[in-house]
Amino acid sequence: MSLVVFPFKDEPPALISQNIEIALRHDRVEEVWGIAEPDTGIAQDLRDSASRYSTYHSKPVALLEQERIGDLRPGKGDAMNTAIQRAAEQDRERVHFYDADITNFDAGWIEGAERAADRGYGVVRHRFPRAATDAMITWFITRPGLAMFFPGTILPRLDQPLGGEFLVTTPALHALAASADVRARSDWGIDTMVTYETATLGLGLYEHHVTDGKRHALYGSLADLETMAVECLDAVRSLHGRPPPLLNAKHASDSATPAPQDLKEMVAFDADGTAAILETPLTADETDIAGRLPIPLEQAAADEEAWGATLAHLLQEFRLDLPQWRALAFRLWVARVLAYTREVVPRGYDGAMSYLEGTIRGYETAGQSADR
Ligand code: GDX
Ligand code: MN
Image 1 (spheres, protein in one colour):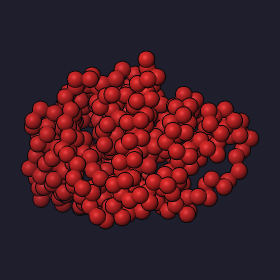
Image 2 (cartoon, rainbow, N blue to C red):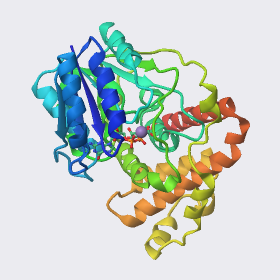
Image 3 (cartoon, rainbow, N blue to C red):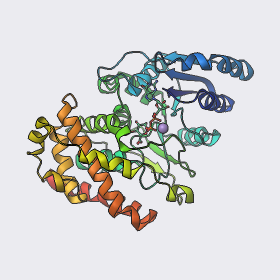
């Protein structure tokens, strides 16, 4: 039987409680946990509906506050780790994680993951189509980083390495609970660490495809993503030199289906509002580290080749604890996203997707030749 976990911060209580009920209704699910960011009061707002649903479905619902487990910024990682530690102590059979802000969550997500676990996969990740201007951290930081560090393996080919939607069976759960690197990662870097850890266990990994995409809150300007971008960069940087996944590890995936038309037309961030980020003058400390980039700042993010050199440098030199590195890395990423949005996105959805996939293959090839 399965446990379903939703970490939540400031999502609408009605949406969270709707998702909790959808999970409870599934006959494979025996219990649901919501892990709240402390002091938001949202857990309190949910208590009545949660207790009603719990009684109605004769299944427990627990609303817990996240504990302080890691040693970076307290965030989603502490919430995930709170659930991982408790579920491991209870030796849970299967644990599903879902973001609480998904608006098209339904039994199909749970069903798809359960079926793959029934077929013997120890880890199941959900994959889904995204807009051409969405997943900009995934496409320009995480997948390229995984391609450079682990070329030729499953890691750079995972569709959603940052996705918070996955299922783990008992052995994978125990491995996550025992990993000091997973526990330490209290911030947005958690998804990267969970992905690395679960992909290297050799327990079988299945990617279940959600045809309609993941519908959830999108962002305005890229400025809203600064913390996430630098924390995800730091997480992938921390994987340098780690053992790669076994080459013969069991991996399979549902085949992708064409993206829904509205996703193909969706603009996922405000490009005009974002351009101002590149107008702010550099501080003296930023100028100093920018002077050591392998490619001058103005061209450092111009195309996939320049970005490969720039990102490789960031993956060596970046320091999450230094404001100048956070600011410079963020600025470079914004420049890369805007260049792509200007030059590639106008080719249309399918053209943009095949361009992006091509960049990952290119970084893998570069990573492979660097290894020799
Ligand atoms: N308890 C708790 N505490 N929950 C949190 C916290 C926190 O500090 N921060 C976020 N959450 C919850 C949030 O309420 C939601 O349910 C979920 O975690 C994901 O957060 P959201 O703000 O919806 O993130 P977003 O932009 O959807 O990002 C996800 O996908 C990104 C990506 O693939 O691009 C998220 O899993 C990111 O880690 C990932 O980079
Ligand atoms: Mn979201």
